[in-house]
Length: 312
Image 1 (spheres, rainbow, N blue to C red):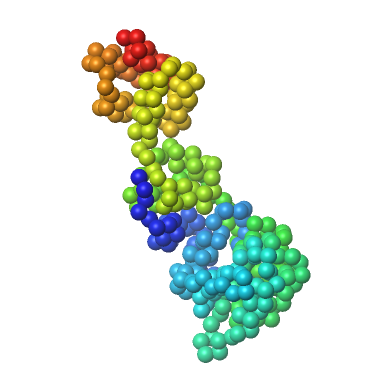
Image 2 (tube, rainbow, N blue to C red):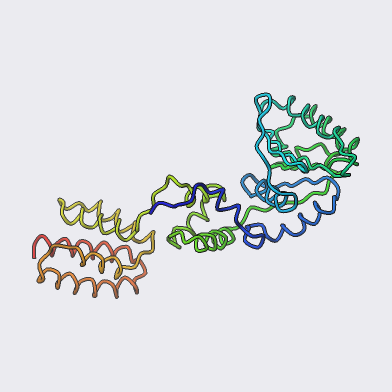
């Protein structure tokens, strides 16, 4: 199955506030920004969702941004906010741009500009001193939101002058509920067991790429397993291949009855062999459900089917 979604960003932009993974932080942060409270430091581990959450709130409060390229670097701009990523090596040029923004005060609209600096932990001490000057000197016209993976990389005096909020990395079940809701909302087929495993192993961005990348093709997992079974049954017996397939069935938590109901619809074997296979599947399906180490029973069933097909 190929998703008819242009990219994952298009899907995620349609989320409502209660659907985002950090919905508990959403209301308090939105309130702080709307009420022009002091400068903010948003900190937490890498890929916890800090950047997405702040961008989401700013878009909800002030509207969307445009991507701007100047002097070999890029940033995101709205009449009310700017977002800079300090992973860029041209930090001195970005600082000059920030300086021009905070100095350019709109006296007619009496607005506060928000300056978001992502990856603030990459800023050297000298530039941090410039940032401190900006925050103190232009507090009537600007607010700063600093996003960092390392809170203590920020100058202590600057840190004490900001409102600090920690964004925790979502637990696997938080991610599972979040992506399960979105996948079902947009009718994306998925395997619940695999989704939970992905939520256990990967961060939010990586999981999003797995399910929303338009270049990825998704296949019915039962059809793939059936293809593997046919391949093994029609080849020279190899115990390693049977063990690998059994482990795959176990890891995917697939239903044995469903696997072989599809197997029987397409197989070219005689009625007598099919009856023997059905008898073995019925027998082993009961054992597999009760077994402590069901992978051994899955291996035994596949070996038994191979024996029936090749030796009657």
